Length: 369
Image (tube, rainbow, N blue to C red; front, side):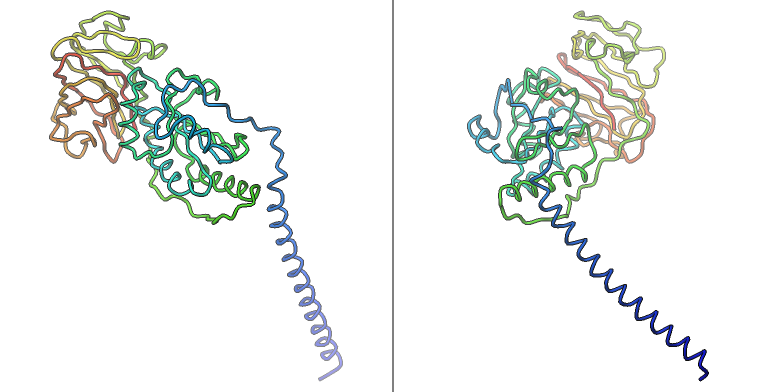
């Protein structure tokens, strides 16, 4: 082996050894940085600057306490991470969030999470505690629910939307705020983070978990009919009533069969009294026609009636039958609340007709999905 090759091999070995030493050094350095990062994060929990966060307001103007008492609720709120859920039981968007909220209650209540449902009603019948009791039983709600009938707590939170979730840390600072449906993974991760902060601050042992509640999220139609209001006050600045008779505040109006039907508008037929939040059928029979685009159609109603549901002039097909249609195409409504008429896999346009038997039937809204 000549001297040039020998020299090359020696240099190669020296370079290889040097690279190995450097690699080991960086490996140790990387481990130190990672350990330092974890230590810093763990110790920074007590050093969070909360000067930019608002404190959650007190619960004020509460008409009824369900699943709790004022004294019990005040006691259990101390040092808890609190999720305030502002909802109302006939709101379909609120209802779709409830499986997640009840699952979080089951999963995290023993770890320091307290959920408080703030029931702020949209319609008068939602102020009745018996109606709300039936709703919380139907949806399996075990956490405290307070009835904010005069919207005083709603105003204290400076809220304008259903549903809305605020999460306050164990010191009462609002650390998260979400309007509407969705963002369930994000919301649950905030819950986990704030529970970890609480455990560290209070010196508690906590079983940490990164797993999330696994519930299939409702997929909305991209193009769908907007919510339609039957009350003249609620429908202000919305051109939703297609009948040429229009809204007649406080009056009983005879609505005639329409000559044509426009998309996203409703057409009552028969004698109806106009209220600020609804219409009430005065004649023994009447109907409502609607050309909509969606995969789901719901109505919010009050008082007993028998409804016959037609789709495109035919009895409601089974593949479009909503969850509240018990037999064929007939739906009997009695309890005040929300009923699902249409449920399908794909969004599409259809002419919906509801034939109504029963004077006194009152309708508030159509909602869609």
